[in-house]
Length: 244
Ligand code: NAP
Image (cartoon, rainbow, N blue to C red):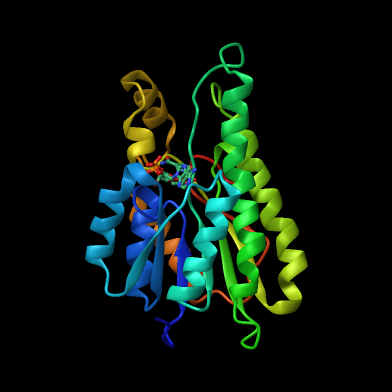
């Protein structure tokens, strides 16, 4: 069922930063397509229950066939896309000696999936309206580097390079492409870190605390709804940790 409402698709929209963004974009008047994989179905359902207008999209972004099925579902359920937020991510935390080729390939499969989804979803951006927003959630560590996260930092640096190149390809269609690079944010991804790592992180943040997912969502909301002359940029949101 399609409507006149603008549509935002949020990958990894069932937990953490993606969940906060799903809720804020719904508050801002979007119909929100919440992408999730099996294990977060309950979380994704809980997010859906809290927003005015949305729908669930089950797909593993490392699988191109599942992305194609999700696109068919978006076409059927919404018929258009105005904003794509690539928020899905994993972080495999091992040093270079422990990291395997399989770990590396899994980490890289996420950025490959974000690229493929973006490429294939473009036809659903409303051509006649000639506008749209693509927002990639990268990370401070793609710029600063981080011990024990080499493939993750490579993936996030690649995502920012994707943002900058895609901005140039889509500018003529008035589709704006930006990255938001969080610092350390209080989500399942950081909650699972060992206590000594959490303490080291906290000690390094000038504002002295982790960020809230809503503080990332506020910036995503600005890019999705109000920014009209920002494209190809990485906006750092990290409590003073890194200036970019
Ligand atoms: P999170 O709660 O773990 O969110 C990651 C989301 O991506 C989850 O919903 C996850 O599902 C989903 N996902 C993972 N692999 C997927 C796949 N193959 N297909 C579809 N969805 C998949 O952690 P988060 O902190 O909110 O992370 C959101 C984004 O912010 C990520 O890109 C992360 O790298 C980035 N980020 C986070 C921080 C931080 O400090 N938290 C800092 C910088 C950047 P599952 O829960 O089922 O795995």
